[in-house]
Length: 344
Image (cartoon, rainbow, N blue to C red; front, side, top):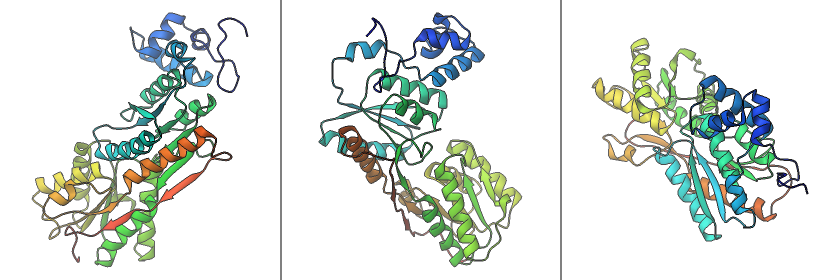
């Protein structure tokens, strides 16, 4: 093998920083600054360099050189929001299984940013992790990892179905049950507040909401679906706008725990009584939902088991116990009725 030649686990030549710089039309030092964030690089240059690095499958090799004779006992875990308790429970399930097998996890928080996600993935590749679990923002992370011969399990949502294993909760089923509960109580004007419809989670929950309406022969009204940005504050503002536009609403379905927090805050700000003035259900049960008065009816996800199953899958791929085409494992949620709903 020629001196200094870099190869992937699949025997392919690994792209260098020089390759990235050439493809992006910049100097190697500029490419390095754009990729590492150490030093200034214009936003347009950074975007061009990141696109070139992704296209070429580039990963930094400085850490990898020091680890090349070792067998890593680290598994990468890429999550979207460390502040969200959902991800803490997910990580707990992952850690329990990995720890029992003698592995530790390295957590990367991308904060919902695709550039940070890819930067984190490149760092994990440089550390030569033998496997990775990802809550993906796009198909790019899975493609980059699998292209380097690293097994990937997508968890909670699925972006690279043809390339990666996945462990998912049946969001459509859970949302259908929650919405059906409201419809059975006589509600016909049910608002749906959701923060994203680009991921399989949001798409599935909207699908379940629409299915329940169809089953009850209630017309779907797209104006009752409120799209919000990430964060409880955005959800509160969107809920206020929804209520202003549709004062005839009798119920709201919040698509996840962060959205539910924002909906709750806005209802309290308006001094609307739950459920006397408005019934409320949420997807993604969290402890705070039983600590408020009234307690919030919610779809409970088996989050710890979700993480544990993802860890089991990635370990099976790493060991060679699991081979062949990507596998998708589905887990069922459970609707928990509490005091936040009443007959319309």
